[in-house]
Image (cartoon, rainbow, N blue to C red):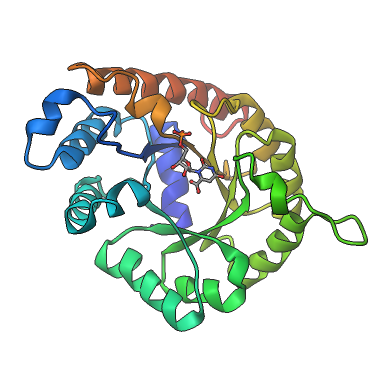
Amino acid sequence: MTRTALIEQIRSKKSFLCVGLDTDLSKIPAHLLETEDPIFEFNKAIIDATKDFCVAYKPNNAFYECYGVKGWESLQKTVDYIPENCFVIADAKRGDIGNTSKYYAQTFFETLGCDAVTVAPYMGEDSVTPFLEYPDKWVIVLALTSNAGALDFQFTTDAKGEELYKKVLKKTAQWGTPENTMFVVGATRAEGIGEVRKLVPDHFFLVPGVGAQGGSLEDVANYGWNDDCGLLVNSSRGIIYASNGIDFAQKARTEAQKIQLQMEHILKEKGFIG
Ligand SMILES: O=C(O)c1cc(=O)[nH]c(=O)n1[C@@H]1O[C@H](COP(=O)(O)O)[C@@H](O)[C@H]1O
């Protein structure tokens, strides 16, 4: 999906919500466990229930790969089921020497057919550029993550006092363009989002950490907004596990709609929609 198409979806759905498909067999309703493919049945119901309120889905590979071939089948079926007008992010956090990254890119863009893949930039330029060779596909680089461990490396400073995450941002932003590169910035680090926005004014951010991790949507919008919205805000557990009963899809729909309404309000306040 192109950047223009993504922006059009945000305008028409009045939403910049990404629903995270972190589908955990220990959390899904018991009645689905009796079906042939519980992960896919759960995802299908969640997608049907939430597709009016979000512009993106983000299956997290860990929850699929752990089941081997069967997990990959559930993932492929899920990606195939996601409507054409939604942006699909493989949250796989890949990145390796160039000739290996090339096959990761093939896996997520050609075989699975996703629009974007999350990448850890630690191995440098040749580990990221193979993902940038696909037209209308995206690399989403980990910049400032939402977890406690972000403090271990990302905020360490050099002799001039510059944090490592800023160095990473400045460098990785040169490898691609705002048409094919996004950055992951955690919603739990609101002020950090503002810092990242200063360094990369034009790029889209994937912002996980609202909902279960406690980040605030208002803060994300205040610190991370740009003229094209520039934000995809992810919530996984807060939406998909709103209930583990027979009403799970309906409850997920209600949660997604709540966030969409907040987003609509923000989009109006910013003058992005009428
Ligand atoms: O790359 C990510 O998506 C990611 C980066 C980050 O810094 N923090 C983070 O939580 N995530 C992912 O975003 C999702 C958050 O899920 P919830 O906390 O359940 O909304 C999970 O799939 C995480 O792997």
